[in-house]
Picture 1 (cartoon, helix red, strand yellow):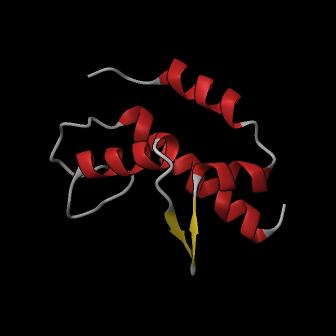
Picture 2 (picture 1 turned 120 degrees about the vertical axis):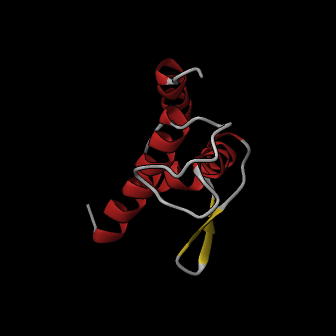
Length: 90
């Protein structure tokens, strides 16, 4: 895998971790990804990227979940099913 592919995979993994593990109603800062807006912001950003077709910045480009899966050769429907099985309910 190219360095760019590894970076893209890391971004996708972080979005999935943020969506699965973070409390959407929390205003505390995530241990994994610290932002001034808190854990709820990280969760919402991940949710928008994974499920609402909201792109994130990837270098000078805008990248959607569909783009990331296509570039990495990942079946996005199967991935979404796996994400749904591992979500933590708060």
